[in-house]
Figure: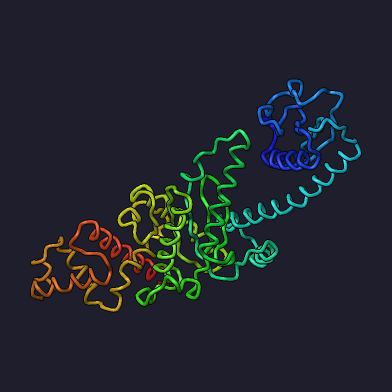
Length: 403
């Protein structure tokens, strides 16, 4: 049985149940080693056919079953009413059931192809965007809208109570994952609004439509990220949407859930960058902030600068954190001098030629605009690193432009 695929066992379960119901008879299916993989008598699963007490050998009807390269047999016993089942009738019923399963299995294949397409997008395995868009359209995946990644970690829910003698652990996992996806799609109202894929290991990826229209229910007037481009646009609204989704999923699953969100990046290749953001946020957030939270790079604190390997992402984060000060060079200068004077208010005020109370007012304004207080250690470290990264990026850009 160890060599029998999950897909073959899934199909065998459906054929066994439907054939038994139509013929009112015990049914089992064996693999090519004559090990029972499904049966109307669950206690027989895993046994050799020789051990089967289904009925006497002479009354069995045996019909070959083939799926892809795997082979087995459908074995039908004497009817529960003890009436003889004509062989021709049994073959006709089995053929009808198998044809139905082939049709349904095509839908499963479409589901797998859809999952594979999204997996390729997340890994950046896109050679031709036009071909990819055409494939996506055929699979019912709308990639024409701007999208950002929401990564849901529901491993706690997926692992709950998976033991059952009636179905394999893998089938139970898929059923729970599908329930989770249904809950996500229902929350966002439309399948095209939130395209979902099963990534395995309890994780579901959501490609969330992230333009202003789709995020309008969670947006407010303070969300604008002027001068930062599309990478950080609508991030606050997306965070609020993910917070609301977290509450819904925790209520539906009664389990611990963690969510990481990524920024929007333009183009199909941007989905891989958004996924990288979401993975980093989920991994670092789970480690440093715990479960049942929504994690994003902008709220990870010092951990983001330490844990993120991508230098460009660090620079983007530095720009984002300090962006509220871009319109007030005086505040940026104050912040820089404050750190240069080892956060000593009297020394910083003297160097700036301002009263200490004026310095305090400016620091209060910096804290109000950025959400980070330079007089608090963790906030000060983030702001200092952001200043250094911005400076290094500026110098690097200028040097690259020199002849």
